Image (cartoon, rainbow, N blue to C red; front, side, top):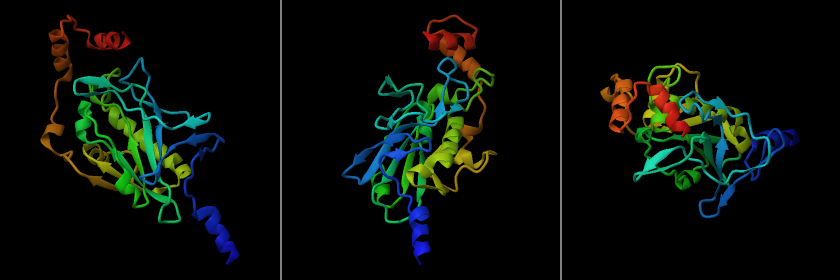
Length: 257
């Protein structure tokens, strides 16, 4: 009996406590929400974007190498009410952990991927209060949006689907690190819109175990048709008053200014 109790104490109860202690001995400090009954860890980095090549695939973040105050969210570049906000260096997670879960074990994980409207830079703010009462860890993924995330010229410089690749990187980070926050890597549910549906068709390794899709299907014809993006972008450049046939050069110069 005593050995069983010790086993539960050492292995079963892995409830996250603030601050989080990383495997390298560094501390991650979050913000406790006294009303919602949870602690939020904001801006946890999972990937890196080369700011000189913002359309290129992201790379895994090397890991937090010092004490880290996870108190500021870092949304990606987006447009709200004709106002541009956010940053390029945005590949982060906002992690919400219940303070007093109802189960004494590793907690199920729900990963929120913004709906397809966010492909066009729109945004919605995650409010996890309701889910916290059900003893789950909720994770919001910040990934590249708009042209940085989904423009595709089918070239090495602008290969396309950067945003979806960011999401894959986020799921890999979760699988590797979420146990530190008390999460069960074998109980991951992705929820959101088109992105979640697209991942179900992906040939990647298994990234999550369940999916909740609450918007457009990936089989809708508008997502399946091909378009000549190079020509469309050239027209936009021309209408903006520029005279250029070098699309890649124009994009590079514009982003470096």
